[in-house]
Image 1 (cartoon, rainbow, N blue to C red):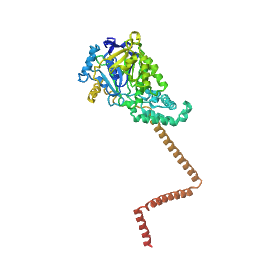
Image 2 (image 1 turned 180 degrees about the vertical axis):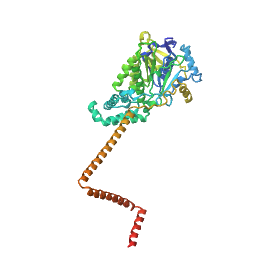
Image 3 (image 1 turned 90 degrees about the vertical axis):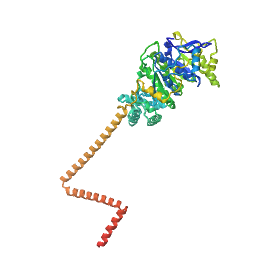
Image 4 (image 1 turned 60 degrees about the vertical axis):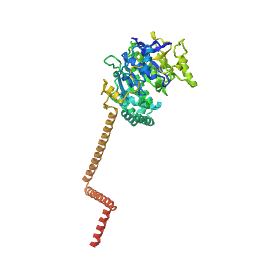
Length: 514
C-alpha cells in the first residue's frame, strides 16, 4: 500500500483491499449517498489517509463534526468494539488511533484563523453570482471593475466597491458614452445587494491580509500534510456565499499554481462538500468555468472531490471527469429516485458478482459501492466495500481543544489583525474632499472679485462727485439695517413675560412723564 491509500475491504468476504492509487488521486472523485449513510466518515478517512501520505487537504466542516481530525480516537464503549472488529474483518492491520495536523479556518474569525480575499481577486463574475445580479447589473459591475483598474484604484473590501459604484453614478453620463448604459437603477440594485451581503456577515470575507495560497500547502515536521478545515456550520446559513467562496478558492488555485503534469501524488486535495449548492440555479457561464477548472486543474497537481447526496446533483460533463467514486446508499421511493439510482449505476464498470443498482440500494451504513482508478487510469470494477474506520476522533470537539489547536498553529497571529490600507474608498474620499475644497476656494474667489468690482464702481462714482449721496445712502441703509434688526429683536421679546414687563415699564414711564 506504499503507493495508495487504503479505503476498505471488498469482495464477497470484504478481505480484498480497495486502494485509491496516489498517482491517480488528482483525477478527482465523488462521494455520494443519502443522509446518514456514512459520507462524513468516508470524507474523514480520506482526509486522514492523504495527510498520512504527506498530501495537504482542504475541506469544509458543514456539520461541525470533522474537527475531531485534530484529536486521536479512543476506546470509548460506544465505538471501540465495532471499529476494532471492522478493522480486523477487512485486514486493516495498521489500524491505530492518532491525531492529525489540522489548521482551522473561519470566514467569521470565530472558530479558526480569519480567511479573506479582496474584491478584486474575487472578480466580477463570481461577485455577480454571489449577489445574484441580472445581466444588466453584471454589466455595470464589470464597468466598475474596469474603471477602478484603469484609474489604479484597488478594490479590497465592500466599502471600496460601494464607493466605486457611487462614483460611477456621479459620472454615469460620460461613462455611458464610453462603456454603455450605466443605469442608476442598476447601481441602486447592486448597492442594495451589497447591504444584504454585509448584513449576512459577507463583508468579513473581503479585506486584508488576504489568504496566501501557500499556507494551504503546509506539512508538519514529520512530513504529514496539514488538514485545512473551514468552519462552515454558520457559513451554511448563507449557502450562496459558501458555494461562491469555495469556487473562488478553487479558481485561485487553478490560476496560480504551475503545471506539474502527472505527479506521483497530489500537491493538494480539495473536498467540495454540499456540492449541489455550487450548481443550483447557476448560470451557464459559471458551470462552464467549473467544468474548465475540473478538467485542467489536475495538471496542477490538485485533486477535487465533490461530496453530495445524489450524483445527479453534479452536471453530466463534470461527473464524467470524476474517476474515483465512493457511492453510499441511495433511497428509491419515488419514480425520480429510481431514475437517479439507475443513472448512478450506469456510471460504474459492471461486476458479474452482483447487480450494481441493487447494491447501491442495499448497502448499509459504512458500506459503499466503490470504483477506483487502476493502472493506466482505467476505471476499476465496481465493488461492494466495507469502509475502514477512522483513526481520529469521530465527532465534534469542545472549545478548549479547538482553541489549543489554533494557538499551536504555525499561522497563529498572521491573519488576526485586519489591515485597511489606502484603496478606492480612501482615494475617492480624498478626491471628494479636494473637490469640495476647490469649490469653496472658487466661491471665495468669486466673492472677492464681486467685492472688488463694487469697490471699483464706488471709486468711479466718487471721482464723478457722487460721494455725498453715496455716503448718505450707505449711512441710511446701515441705519435702516440696524433699525430693522432692533425691531425684529424687540418683536421677538414681546412674546415673552420679560418682554411684556419691559413694554409695561416703558409705557408707564411715558404716561407718568406726561
